Length: 179
Image (cartoon, rainbow, N blue to C red; front, side, top):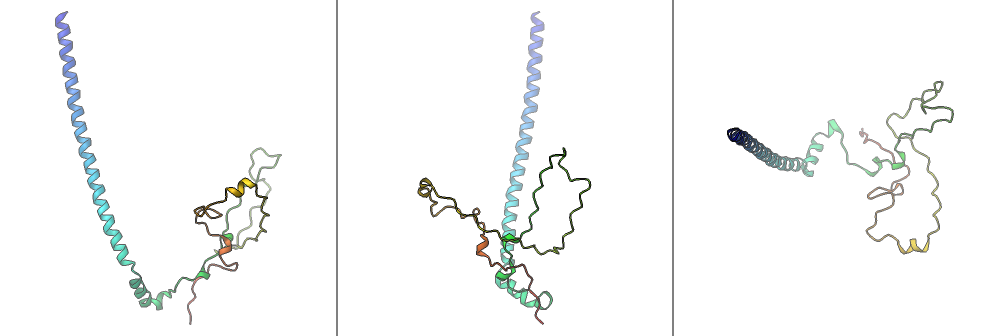
């Protein structure tokens, strides 16, 4: 019985030694792979720095002006003007889905419903009617005390342009060649 216990102990030690040997080599392989990935990341960061420097060099304003002047006959590029931008209210957003009628279970379109009319938009946004501004609600005394400070976000979200800032008749246009 004692010999069997010695044999089992020796087999257990040999199995554990084999397992530790394999885990050691797996760990070394993972460390080598991690170092290779870190070296590649460092190389790609260096390449990115070079590409950013090249981009900055190629996009110098004086170089771009020279290219525009040199190719004006072919491209007819002009300076961007404020009248080339449209108002935010002219963006044609998709309409929200209509709620299902009470008689239908699926909520899908009626089988005899006419298909939507094709748009004659041709790329230009359809002007939306201007809605009258809603009257301001009565301000409570607590709300007046909690007035926004100088670092509060503008109405409409942080950095969102207000339609009042843009001219009402502004449309997106292209610079036409002058003949």
